[in-house]
Image 1: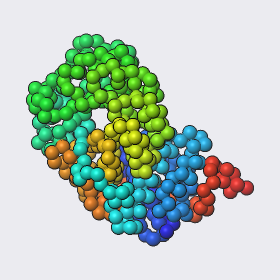
Image 2 (image 1 turned 60 degrees about the horizontal axis):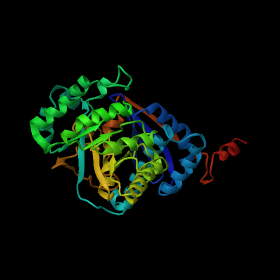
Image 3 (image 1 turned 135 degrees about the vertical axis):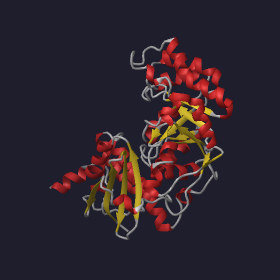
Image 4 (image 1 turned 135 degrees about the horizontal axis):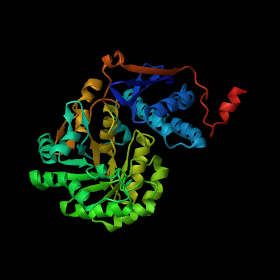
Length: 399
């Protein structure tokens, strides 16, 4: 079996998503996905990665991945190239599952759990406006989430106050304003709802510590990305100085960027994203590294149904899973439009999709929509099956 074409799909209604389809001479098609900063990822996919993988065996996932990584390492891999490679790699696993008629979690070695614990990131989309809801009455939103089976939620009530000082200072008055939605949740549902606080690395250390001290009485589940992920020592100091667990960071790509984070013991919990960090196998390697340090893992999941399915399979397999992030506003609205699949939540847990590979497919009508932008890279490719390191093969081909 050989890869014959790499196809990217993007819809104007869902501009944050890029779906990747890997075509083969057997007729099997694998689905992958990445999210955000799509122009760069699309350029990397078609301009850099597709010429390397066309003509390769899609079942050689590790070999294909390493060949591409060896090449993109030459000029700085962590960004558009790795996001594009992640989407491609997810599609290769989907292809393998279809080839062997096995779900992804079986290919990974089986399940350690039957249900996937989740928290809801309170974003709004279409008719499900969870972002507006927690600004209006977070207590009412908490009741709505509980009614839908969701028992943990994440909000970011302090971000709005960072603009004026560029995150250098937060007043006590603004801290109190930021606490209001948290107070509303506790007043409405008590401790039935777990609360995570996203910080979006908007604050300096002194401001984050002021916020954390104010949050401590509210039994907060975690604080995420308290500083930019490049400041390992400072984040470690914050994590040691406050009484709320710290999570970081979906911004770290591949096991190499997570390695020092774990060796240094930067945070109590780590987070990674399989459609950003290098893919499914890379996520498993990161999880194994974290497990060796006794650190639980959160899977970042704010994309579409393909990423969500991948996170469900990974969540079923990974022993040290803490939570998988999910977005009710996405899976209740556009997931069924793209794929016909609407995940269900019960008692704070998500279900695992069934069927070969990821267990999710695009609906045929998605390929006929007027707002679809499609780009296809085909042909024999340039690498001709080579596994040489670096990009010197390209020079030789030009000669």
